[in-house]
Image 1 (cartoon, rainbow, N blue to C red):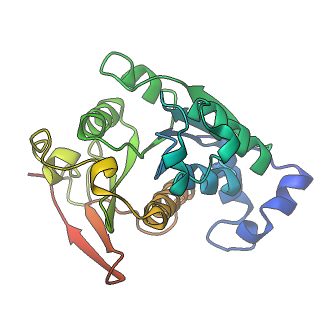
Image 2: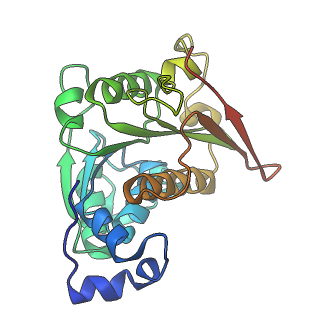
Length: 251
């Protein structure tokens, strides 16, 4: 990732980032040069895309094969009522262009599959998984590991959510490989064991919390600040307003 030059309007737009010593002009240039893929323009992807676009990520790829429906609007805030029936990648791209014209959006109007995932992932520096099913989560994790691309993965239940960062192709200070998704969740749950949000329900604001946390992890990874959630699973319980962190290691 090479730094990108900021013009005067970008300097004004990102002024609150640039005055942060931890980010500064150099960090903002890294954000502009970054290429980030977001899987899903839904509950998690919507807020993640909005905050990443506002932060000045230069290129945002969006993978989604779905169209906007009325029931999406309770949580998928990048879309509006007039977007019902439109492809989510189109609706999201239009919203991003309105929010920040400096961001280039690359729509991938398709479903992530084993035969296309790696070719797509290799076009990006980082991947955000905002998918809502285990097939895609495991595929994203395995593909990111093979492509040596960092993955910020999140999930939500009815009133709870989680976020972690995966870089299993790198080693820690002791020379040990960092953990993978399968070290955290070795096997997929049986079909039907975890009901979809259409059956179980979901609080819309919860997806905003987790999606924003995913965006924050991306910003940290791109700029090199702080301690990303590598080897740590951040858990959020919305009903009790509690955060907990679980550490995990390579098996």
